Image (tube, rainbow, N blue to C red; front, top):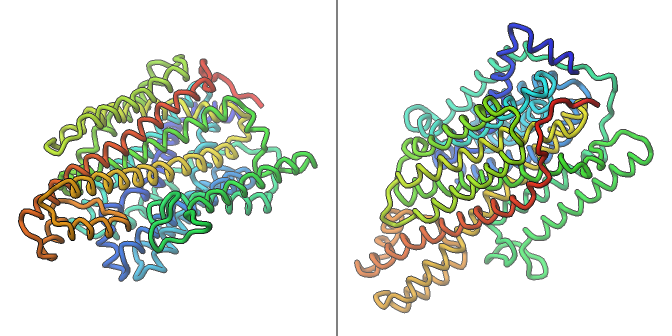
Amino acid sequence: MASGAGAVESSATARLVLPTLAAGQFLMALDSSVMNVSIATVAEDVGTTVTGIQGAITAYTLVMAMFMIPGGKVGALIGRKRAFVIGCGIYGCGSLTTALAPNLPVLLLGWSFLEGVGAALILPAIVALVAGNFAAERRPAAYGLVAAAGAVAIALGPLIGGVATTYFSWRWVFAGEVVMVLGIVVLARHIADAASDERPRIDLVGAVLSALGLGTFVYGVLRSSEWGWFRPKPDAPSWLGVSLVVWLMLAGLLLIWLFLRWEARLVERRREPLVDPAMLHNKQLTGGLTMFFFQYLVQMGVFFVVPLYLSVALGLSALVTGARILPLSVTLLAAAVLIPRFLPDVSPRRVVRIGILALLTGAVVLMAALDADAGAEIVTIPLLLIGFGMGALASQLGSVTVSAVPEERSAEVGGVQNAVTNLGASIGTALAGSIMIAALTSSFLTSVEQNPAVPADVKNQATAELQNGVPFSSDAQLKSALDKAGTSNEVTQAALDANADARIDGLRAALAILAITALLAMFFTHRIPTAQPRSAKP
């Protein structure tokens, strides 16, 4: 495989390989954020509810999580390049179906299922193709750029979705994805695919167990805001007085344990496993995967909290909100590309620790700067720090995980790596959201109950309604609701003041939990190697 890499890099077309793979990563990540600012418009256009569209977004994440590990094995079976191209084809069909969708079922087929299956083939293949097309010393920069492309897509998603929905139609986003897929497929002919001497087989039992385990766990996490983490919300499903979220997560963990036991049994019988359990004893690999988990947990938590502050608390439009997040993209790209270029021999462990410290500092600075009277400019410095931290991690982690195993297993690692990042992203979004809502509810109720201007019957009504969860609403939305209810000006002003303070308290609580998570990640950095990989011989 090393010779293959050298051949690719010596060719005149080598410069097209990395942008092609980065474009694939950009496209896969874009769908996780591009429609967040246009949910109501999409729901109205296809004749469904906001909940229905949120369900489609959830299902996309779910399908990706379920098929990511089997998708990595398919790449080893049919070839990484072929899996990449087939995945792009499936994804393109899904985007076209979504662009033309007349109703929710067709939208679910295109957006949630076809695009999810396509992403499950593409993402593991990208990890393997970077390993097969670039020498060991160039991989940190290559992985950094690819990972940065995904993070930039998440940051730009709201801006792209806002522009398309405001001036054209949300359908043009998915039509544009079809065009982008066609371009990627055309350019993919320049990618070298290292042939494998082995003919691996698909472990169907393992594939089913891994898909059910990851799918069940992620589904439970995604339902946490609606059903409650431990104590079930009113009318939410429960068992033995505990939210169904807990039972789904436990069932998912049990299925994952059964999957690992099954894989160990296959190894003992000298049969081909889907994932070799021995990989989990590899200190460098598990260290890299752990950092990926924490990075995406914090990253997606930030991408959930900051746009909410800008769009709801400050009332900015989708376009301005997207523009305010752009500073993060600048330092993210700079760190991901420039650190490997100018510091090729730097210690990966040191860079990872600096990156985590930047994430922690950015979250703490933003938490301290949040104030009811603050403007949108307060997010700039924290986002620059958070972007630098993400870029620093992106510049090292891909190379750390792949260099931990022989190159012929890079697609297998890619499947596990993307499954871990999906878990981190799902938990980060759900955790930030639930902590924020819990803190907001508590703060709002405390402010209302302590305010003598609010009548007792209004306090009782607020307490009863907030048991079902409080929406993260703007002052305009709350004032409109209070005017319809016929409340007095004094009560309305008291509620608006309480809502403004509660929003800040909720956002601070969410950022605090993300900062604590970043600090926790620091305890696992000793598993990251201190020297850059220079070879990855089988």
